[in-house]
Image (tube, rainbow, N blue to C red; front, side, top):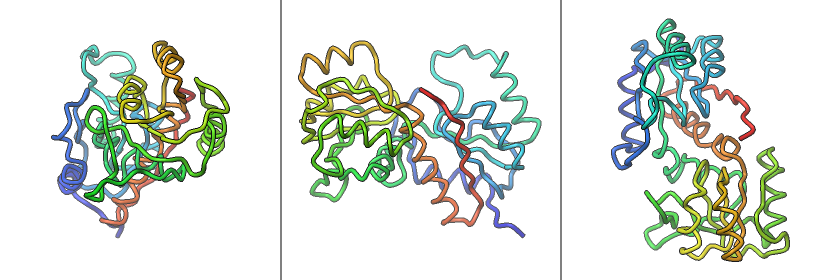
Length: 259
């Protein structure tokens, strides 16, 4: 018989591990849609899209675990159109949906920022208490150094090679990167906090119009490396941790997204 875990046991472990109560988030964290009580196979992914749901159904998954779930603040609460089709598919197949947004960004071992540093061979600054040096809202921004002494142009090239997505660089190609800050996803609005902490280059997923002016006017570098591209690794690491802890099968499905 395949290893299994109860829905409640998994929810308790995820809550204890990720501590969602610490965050004032834009969506509910945890079990968003209740499915069957026993879980033997989990499909993980970045976003609870229809394509991911279809893949989970095809693989006979009992649960889906994602970074971007549903029921976002200020969205239309009506269950219509794509939202209805997604929810109907889950309910018809009795599949659980677990989602963790900021808690998965922030986790110091399995979080998106920790895992981006691992993929890129960046070295986080470590504080006296042994934890990574972080700053900004909810301590989401990480600080450290790149894998080697490099310029902003070389760092952008390395990101493209390792993440498989060409980034956008605002700044001079030959500008040295001495102090690096990063926060995955749509964290471009945190650039001022990164610069205040001493960074001369800030990496995030997306870019907004004001980000360009801030980089130019401060003489710093900003690299937009892709929202999806920078956030593929946290949920994979969390799935691997679940497998190691409980023996339950976790399969990552990468639904490509150019943003």
